[in-house]
Length: 303
Image 1 (cartoon, helix red, strand yellow):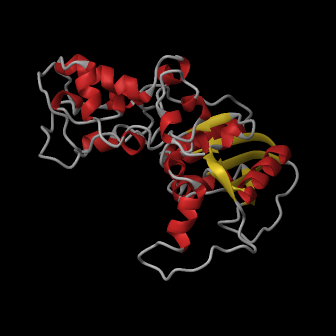
Image 2 (spheres, one colour):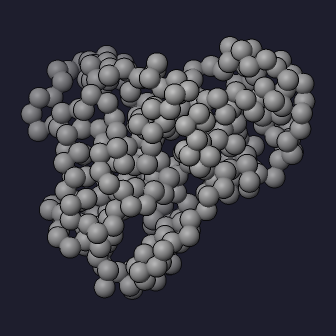
């Protein structure tokens, strides 16, 4: 039997729920494997030895997260960064738009929904200066981004690994699965996602809406665009962006809008609002993305 461990770092537990979304198929997986460690599911305090596959979700936000990641890396033969938080920092890394002091004050002193209180100094782990994806602090064997990853991908990667085989993981962008028609349509205004009613058949970018589909790894089946919602980029950057040092999610979107609308690049850039949240919301914590020469992330984060 193959020993599997689930380690939850700083996250919302949505990734763990996505594993449960396998429903009856989860039984087929567990017939070939033992779940030996999963704090969210069982009362196991210590990470056991001899883990074959460790599935790590969430970002590294505090010292305890870092210690647990390092320990499970040491004890596991294969480590999977599961979910966009583990792969690229995810939405938890939007805390990097503020200083750790601002974050603590907002949580304990200046939060309008709670009574002001001193910041805890005992038991609570110390925050790191910035939030990290797991891959920035430990060697990762497989990356499976998504917020959360679709449940069928869990089976597609776990079953081959359990059987000692190499998994086949989709490599296309969200646009490859989107059924909307892309057209060159002249416009001079970029719309917020909440404005107006988009044409259900026309590409969001062709309508002046910021859609991250062309810059996002597509393992979701373009679910949001099919439901009338522009892609927010939760799957992390597409492979062409990861591979090319001069490609970035920001300049990719600016170039695509300028190409479709014939607007000058500078006019497109002037209208893109709240870049930290709208463009870099799921990848702002990634060192890979921050180190790109064309990235705006270094200008946004506060260390």
